[in-house]
Image 1 (cartoon, one colour):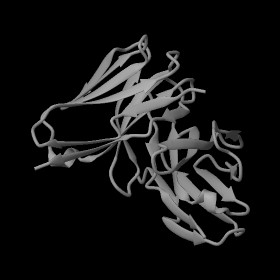
Image 2 (image 1 turned 135 degrees about the vertical axis):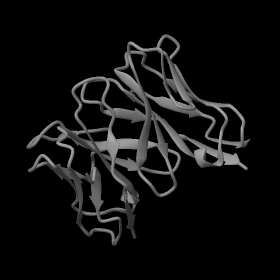
Image 3 (image 1 turned 60 degrees about the vertical axis):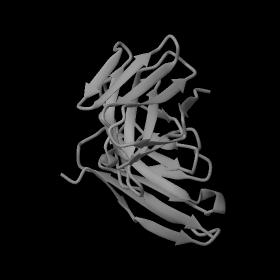
Image 4 (image 1 turned 45 degrees about the vertical axis):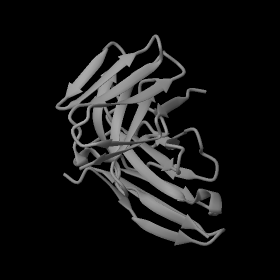
Length: 114
Length: 112
């Protein structure tokens, strides 16, 4: 049981380049989330998904797009990277059905935009 | 806009000390409150989850309390150990679906 995995672990981009971050979970969770973590700001929700084929905006969605074509995968895309998107990105998943369920986090992707 | 605040931002204590980490939130209509641990360069690990109807939860040396009326939660760590050194994050869910609002974290160092 791998839990939540993220690919890649680290990436350097130039301003204007595009990339896709992949998140995969093997726990059959309905809900998946993308967060970014910046120094002193905790984690902020970018986008989330409540099931296959559905996505919704979180607190800081601008500059990002997401897709959930398969239940186990949640992709985060940057179409034109900006230095302000330098951050650590975390994916998480949960069943999301009751108030007893926590989220399970991946190890993170460090992104540096030059 | 819901806000979650953690004080202090950093804390250094000698081994064996009991300590309290604080979390406050602006909207008392919460769904649940969660405490996570984050080691440097790693993801988050869930420590305790307190449902809206509960007042506290315990796991080993950890005890988390919830007071919705005052908008506060505390994480109590008994007999601290160097292995407890990490960043502790408080997060609040305001609805089903568990979308979390995080505090900025408390970075804890336990010195041998």
